[in-house]
Length: 388
Image 1 (cartoon, rainbow, N blue to C red):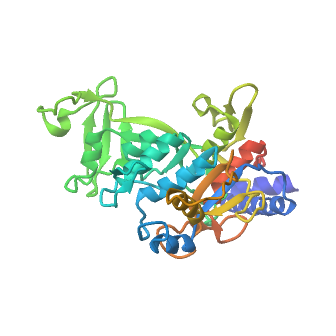
Image 2 (cartoon, one colour; image 1 turned 45 degrees about the horizontal axis):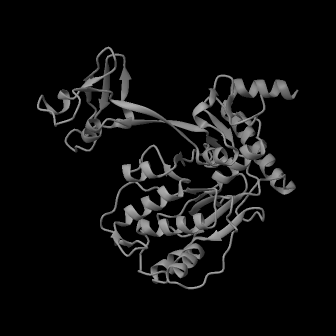
Image 3 (tube, rainbow, N blue to C red; image 1 turned 180 degrees about the vertical axis):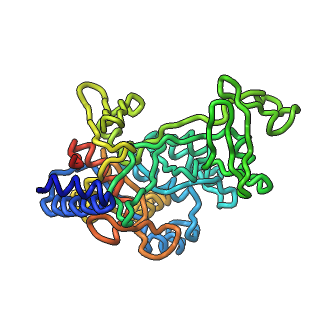
């Protein structure tokens, strides 16, 4: 009866089948949390909340900074976690541009550097910082080259607005600077996110409905002269690829890879078969069950209140780091030693730091929690399997 009913619903009302699958998944997710299955013990959350915003704005840790903090603030938190022996630091914060208008940061030797440079130096010295990207926001070169890894933090909610799945990876297009220049030209109005690649040309839609056609040669290269004429700047190649493709893994996957020693560059991706195989040194291997889009169902078993999750406010890290640099005696702590720390927002109010939404657990959840739940699922080798 159940099989007949399911087949009939799938033929007649596929949307209703999706809703039934959503309901059953949500019930399973809540049940799993109630039974508290085993979980990794090396995960942690450093949260930014309203108290953090007030503490930074008050000047408690030096200068007074408003909501859009200079990057040196994040650099000092990274420094503190590294001093405590953290395994990896994942920042669920997007740094889409350099900010030369921010106050200078003072180095231990007294020299002053740009705030962005200070942050980059701390990441380079740490060697374990994971920075966030999205399809809409890339990283400046200074940050990209000094971070150990980059990771995708995009959330894809289902039709009912609930976050149930995470895309294991995305293939990002990194456009040639001439294409980016064209996209930023208001007179052209080019939309790179809607570009169509054909065998011998690229079609770039414009805001007015027309298209710009860029010819490609047999090797897929374009002529720089098609953009700026024959007088090319020194060092610019006359022919080049319009874009490169970069595979960027979900932040939770990157965290788990650091914990288990998995080599994401050697991943065996077979979406048609519904699996991604991640391997590492020795016999370490994880098989991720995914759908045709490379998405895996999130095992929501560790809410932010889970006692197995190390939780600490961001401003507590800043307080210890500031006291140490002021020469005060700071009680040594190693609570972050060997842990995977996720830094993200727990702000409840309506500002740019707010990152909340519906999950199977409750209608208002900290969405940053998807990262450590994905990581936990891979570390423990326990996955939510979709019924056939």
